[in-house]
Length: 152
Image: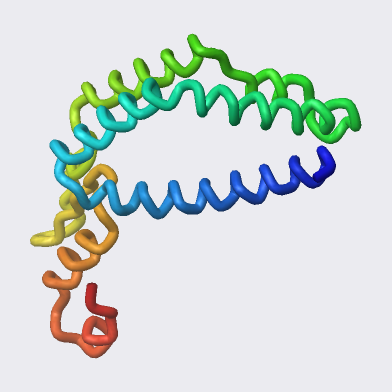
């Protein structure tokens, strides 16, 4: 496989992984704070356990990206950001653990505004979309448009 083909395959894989990460983020948002914290701590441990694999994959990615830099298809700055080291992987694990130690941001009420008599707007941080729709739907009057809302 040519370096160009390897780079293209790497970009396709990156796009697929980004899509899977978005899906996982929505799933994680529905979990309890304790389960999200456990998942982050497990991820940090796996980063450390699989450091050699991560570094080997990074070396392959850098080899393929090096050709793109030579051809002017990737900037040197982006290439430099792609590179990591054993210390870089250790730092990743440390940072993931730091995130696990933060206060849970999901479901906190950020602001409350009374728009009219009996009409109060609550701004809540990052709630699960389906939970938000269910909560909103329960408060709707029995108008035809409200009945047309999809169930969650």
